[in-house]
Length: 342
Image (cartoon, rainbow, N blue to C red):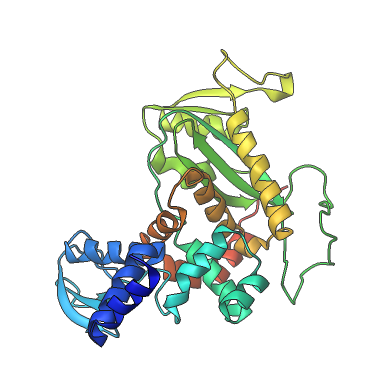
């Protein structure tokens, strides 16, 4: 059917029929709308939970400004498909699909502001709302050989108007040689199947408790841990009764028995640092965990044929995303208190 014929057929429909058809087309072609519709169906089929108390017992409860509304039988609270997610209290939701597409292209905040006609502060907040929803998504158990290593970022107060130290040139170095509290330790862990994790641990050298907090719930009897020879990893492996292979790079040992090494996770570390430096010119320590969430999801979805929909699906699974976004300043203050004695 030619374009003109389609136009004539469309104009023969009533106004309500046109609106309904346009909505159906939008839902079928917009990956963001597909993700929202998927979440609604999940809630309608009683496969979701109350974002307030976690109960699976709830009923439909009308609508609220175009959104489906539900009422929890346990805590009596009402909620919509957006409650608890990063979409909670977001205005201009019709722009979110385009925003995520621009995030996929890794456009700057200035370009996003121009293309969508939104305030730069709004563009910034949306980025970190979305990344807050990725923190605990799609995390399973590490299977088989699992590599773990710590990597370090200099503390950055990029964007702050109240520096607690003298400004440092981009790409600067710490005042203290070696690992110190001027550096943020990030624990990167990945098996050789599909699981990956990136968590800020503390300032300075990691401890056994940091490893437990980051990946303790994600290891099992089937996990074979490969790390460097730091004593914290050894202690963690003993506590968890894991098979552990420590690589002694200080003795120029890089591979054991031709299969045990940390080269895979070291490659991830290298790509992560290049991405943060080249794409963003470094990021503030305050928001570093959010960019770790982003990079981890990029790694998981790098072969996806429907990136925007899957990215949106992952981000909407977390019903604590809104709380996590609001807690960014508090978590940053807590991190600054979490230092290792030199």
